[in-house]
Length: 405
Image (cartoon, rainbow, N blue to C red; front, side):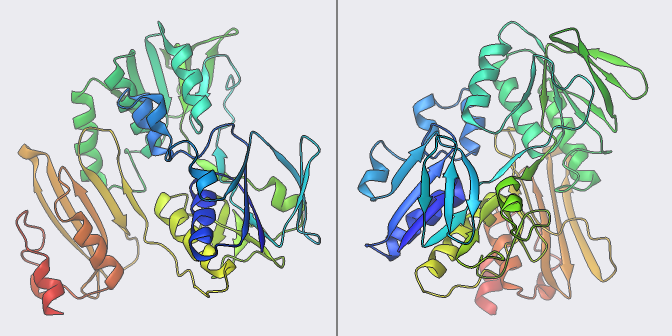
């Protein structure tokens, strides 16, 4: 079996690695646009923050791919798919034909249609080169504005704050930080904590223009107000990279549509990770990319493994506090029960969302004690009715729930 995997990020690498674990004879070719071997994207934040050196960004030691008998072709861009022949044409004129073709091409940053977004000094952060270019440019330019108060925007803000590279301001168009992962209470606590570290915020404000002649000099809000900026970092989310799939005629929605076995609409072509849409969802999360890649590898090796979905889970990486959001945290329909517990003076806040006495969502702020157990509860669907009065206490023994069931 010859498998060609387009993309050497998490899903492509884990898929190839797992295939090799299951099949010692398969020919596995992993093609990446970047010139670098696989690195976990969270490591970029640690590197940006100065917490790890460049060599520690990469996941594996030099020679790992060769030892695994994985063929890596790096710095190569695919330009066309031939779904009938399972062939890929590359920018350098090369061509690969596969028995099985895997699309693990990931996502690209979303840059809103804001005037001036093409000025020098406007950055997005998705790749190692993005980080290297930002660090080279940012020296001596103290006003840093980050557009987006989601996970990536806040991680970038805290990373630059740790480096003391200048005054940092975060602009969020929604009325609170992390609108998908937090409720109002959690967002308020988080903002207060970050302000205490010296990071400024404009919440519920929309940018109309990035100012400057050739180089960035500031931003203008929709209401006409302006603030200075020497660097603008756009952290407004990502979208799946669908050009290849669409041009090849594969069924696409927000992502490349796959079934429970990660098959696309064309025979022997599969997709996994940030590019894939499964049961109407594009996750864009590391746990989902990992789960999909593993399941796909099993299916490619003839060991049927159904992918049933992944419970969304997010953890802020370098903000300086523990913050985890799992599952459904802001239900809009009826039939949910909300449990909360907080100690504002200690910066602690917990929230559980229950459906028919089973945990379906949680926010854990200021502590990580119990986060793994809560994740297990959500996955298992176990009932917690008799523990509702104590389950949020910091010293609660979760083993009682698993032992009693």
